Image (cartoon, rainbow, N blue to C red; front, side, top):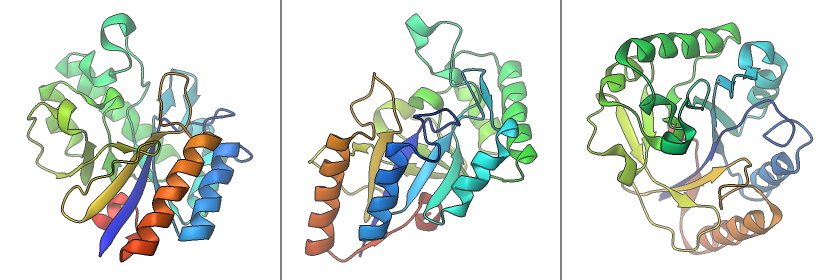
Amino acid sequence: MINITIAIDDNHPETGWGVEGDKSMEYLEALNKEFGAKFTLFIPSNYHYNFPISQYKDWINYLLSKKYFELAAHGHFHQTLDPTRLGEMEFMDMTELECIDRVKSIINEWELVEHKPKGWRNPGWMCQPYCVQYLEKEFEWVALHYQHNHNLSWNTKMFFGADGIHETDIKLHNGNNIMFQSHIAGDWNHNVWNEKNYEQVRLSLKYLVENHDVTFKTISEII
């Protein structure tokens, strides 16, 4: 049995980034209807300082109403003060005290929408070693990229994988699991939810379903 999960980064309540009516959301619903696909959505709790989820509880409720979605945490601002050097690696751009405060802000935003995410992914995939101890206390598992974890030791469950929805060379990770990695939108990523990538991942899922014994799960269901 092969478990298949699809992870999507940077979802936030802005048109085009995972709200009701977006074409990307229609693609996800179509894959669920055709294959039973499930998705773990990695959500920053105040994306670029403009979208605190506490002010968008209806959006969170909309996502939770779709039983094929799992909501996971993906930083707070998903932004740095030095984007030229650090991009959006938020947890590389802070002191230990700032890390403590930032984690508290994340948890507070999720508490205000009355949902506790089980999972975490670092914005930009990386974080300072001293941030790990504060993050692992709050989350049951962390989704990681082999090349970016830099041998950090997490005392919580770790889930590795990063095969893009646009790729055809798909590998097993964490035993018998396949994780398709994607971003909901953005001009700087190749694995966004456009028509071309939707058709590619649909072909990949069709091949896997027809040639293997597979089941679709969220990351928490696999962990």
